[in-house]
Image (cartoon, rainbow, N blue to C red):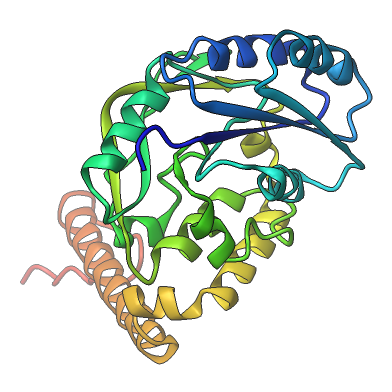
Length: 283
């Protein structure tokens, strides 16, 4: 389908001060066949006022209000009401380049095996510069997330995996979503230029995930996608054997290092640090 409709989903929770800048970047797109759905996730600031100003100026921009229930649920609500064949999530404090949609759609039209199209990204705000992420592969994806949320995909693929998982309450919802969508096949393409701008703030969500929350998210991912992680790392028995082997190798290396230190200290200083080596007495 030529010139397909793209639905840009903008969840907003108390980010009214950034929303104008985000929506300007959408309205500046060279690709015109888009709709934007702003999802007010129970904000207590001026989000509704800012959003309604934009809906009055451009009928492609729509407004959806709901009680606060988290980022995954907000995105799911917006995508449920979306009319587009393609979905592009965009958080309310971030931006996209004017030609991002046009380039991404062109890439999809050139390759029907693709499931996800994304681009290079830059940081702005309290930190600036290129956002360096590893190249995409399923193995790299098994180690960490390497596709930010603002990537283009088909709505039907969102439906097939059941949307964003609302149990990812502390973050990493994008990582889980990409695993669910891609683990059983489908290609990914990165546009070789910057199309996404990620705002860095002192209270960014990624900076506020503590160890306890990270453990919960890791455990949940490991259970939900056990098939994916076993495929790349092996069975739990194999992992246990590898851990034991690594432990034994480290212990052997440590003993060897201690022995070498003892030889040096005994020969040159006349005393042993670890008691591993006794200097022979002179006859």
